Image (cartoon, rainbow, N blue to C red; front, top):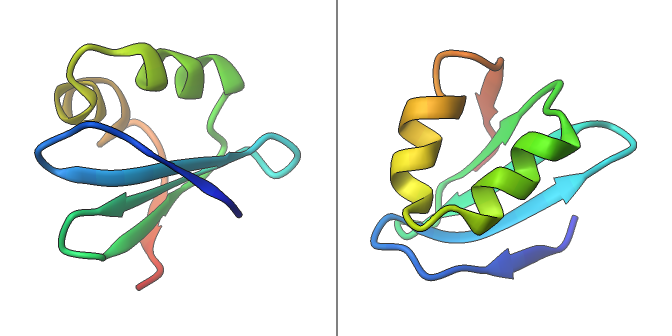
Length: 70
């Protein structure tokens, strides 16, 4: 999955697979997480959020299954 570099103090890049509904987040420490059953609208909101880290913390973490990939 290709990721797009983002401006964030905590997140390095974000990718999304609409067919599998997987959000992929690479953090600045190079750890990578997959968030499952992610609606495309949620990905769009994350990408346009003024603070991607805050959006992730408030609107994604704790609401979607996830797994550390790397």
